Length: 115
Image: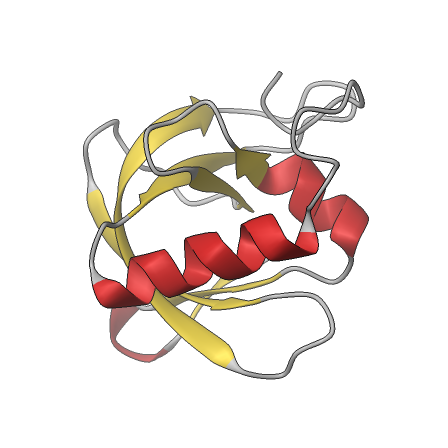
């Protein structure tokens, strides 16, 4: 769940591998993470998020651009937005760790928060 932090920084805690799977957009260039939120964003907005991945307490900083919006909750898809993972060192660290955690599952058939 995304929550505003200090200075407009959002925090996003991925509680489980299942949540991470539902949140990861592998079809976006360099990947993207869906952030459940009621905050309003526009496509192309630049945002800063502190992401905590499953089985970790470390907050990983992530700058990125909004590339997907669910304006309201529909069925199992929560309201929120997806942020494209940056190509900087911090972004590559997040992408590598997400893909390590999701090894063998990325192209699965389970529904996600976006498709």
